[in-house]
Amino acid sequence: MKSVIKTTNQFLNKFGYKLTQVKDNDSDIYRREFLKNSRSVNQAHNQQTVEKVKYLKEKYQEPVFGKVYVWDLMKDLAHCIDPTDPSLYCVSQLVHTMQVVGAMEEDGVEDEDMIISALIHDLGKLLLLTDEAPENIVCMNTVVTSYEEGIGLDNCIFQWNHDEFVYDRFKDYVPKNIAWIIRYHSIMIKPNLVLMNEQDKIYTEKYLKSFRKYDMDSKSIYNLPKNKLSDYRELIEKSFPEPIIF
Ligand SMILES: [Fe+2]
Ligand SMILES: [Fe+2]
Image 1: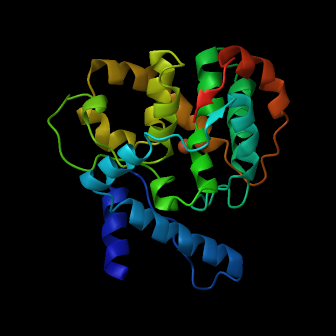
Image 2 (image 1 turned 180 degrees about the vertical axis):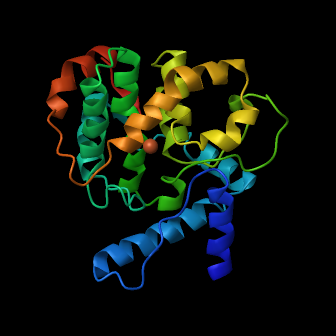
């Protein structure tokens, strides 16, 4: 088991990522359990194969929640907790979403596409409310096989998680740039730069790098949002007036 952790960490370290270590002397039993579970979910996620990704993609061609208003999906984020995220622990994904949008607003981000992307980006985590294994819903993604340089991200098979699910559900209702942001919002940027085509590079510079900053840096169990979901009801209902198959 130790060598699996070491290998996973060696791989992630190369790109500036690492699994959070569990300290044996951590006196908080719940935190220790959380981190231990987080580590095993990450390890399982990193074992996804091309076949597994194809199976999941096929599986989720079928609706899970039926025909639903996006506004109602947003409210359900309050019931969702990412069991792998030690920046949030048991803070809900609704609070996380408000933290991200709040951070953008504090910075004066006016691009509505960024705000809409932030609002919907983690809706795929609603799968956590189903029987799906968490390793197929959360964690960061990279490609599961090798490709030639510059092939373009859309031609690559990435690990499957909430990104692909939410992309699949929203791609027909949002412009191309928003679809791209939500699809790739949790890829490891550095190791996948080489696979990007010109369009991917433009979107990465224009959107993903700053989106990632807000998505990651606003996370804190102490970051009490000043905004609330109802502040965005008009924008959400204007952007998605009809229910969608989710
Ligand atoms: Fe996410
Ligand atoms: Fe997020």
